[in-house]
Image 1 (spheres, rainbow, N blue to C red):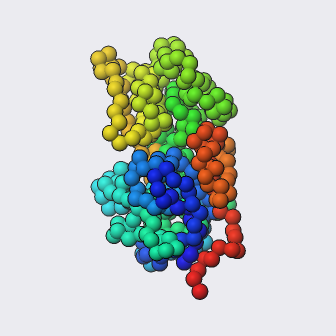
Image 2 (tube, rainbow, N blue to C red):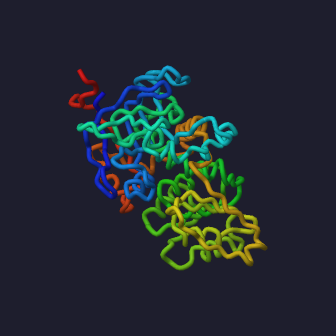
Image 3 (cartoon, rainbow, N blue to C red):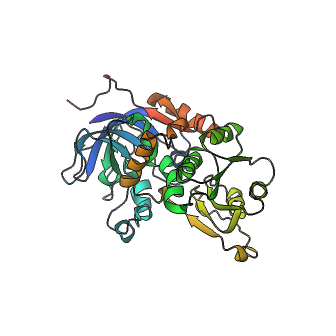
Length: 378
């Protein structure tokens, strides 16, 4: 099968729209016709080779689409299903069997390795050269993809499918960090550091679970304004002095019960820890470069008993959590669509540029149907 995909060929290189060949469906895979795909910071850092997925590659890991074919070993998914595509896991290791699948023992290889577990790739370019595929089990910057079954999440068919892709990673991460990981009780306080897609999803989740003080911290005034509209009770401009000191002032010197760091900046993580109340917890979803370190005060911190919690994908089981978020959205209690700006697939470079510049919170690529695309070889 021939399809159209966005290919990254070199570190920091552009996304090139190319015709590529998609191989035969494996027994444990699902073929999906993509309708939408979210643009995430993780795609950007892989393009930069901070995480070294082999290039050339087809990235994309927040896909949504319609099932066109199902492998013989796949259960629970049928042709015609509307699906969101999420993180890939093995389903067999101790963590997966215990319900902690986002800490799968094979997580890195299955999401960043660029191949199936047997070393094969699903994609070739027009000259027969291999392209890394199965990014997060999907490589959804393509009109069609052969997706690992464990990355596939069926959702109800009466919601706008082109909008739902970001639930597969960024939105799931922010909301899940609050709902599944930190679990602040109703009436508690939270500070969210970074008001991008992940941070604002956390703000929405904090409001949904009943936090009564929600502090958003960022350096972009427009994002702080949006955070207020979405439920933040207070905002802190990170450019104006110490964020931790200002949060302490807002809370009468008590600090917040929980904090979430979404930026991947070491100094911001330190500020998040310094803003905590006694026995508070700071969760970390902002990925720093491998090997980077953060220094914490460890003298007086002993008397505060605060905790540090690392979080991947919001500690979610996508097959159950994503449908929950869809239902909250339907009820108007989780309006993540306020974060989304749509782009045509051909405008993928503009989507990444706008995201990096802070002009767009969550870009979503839309795959318009085109009769010109050669779907199958004759």
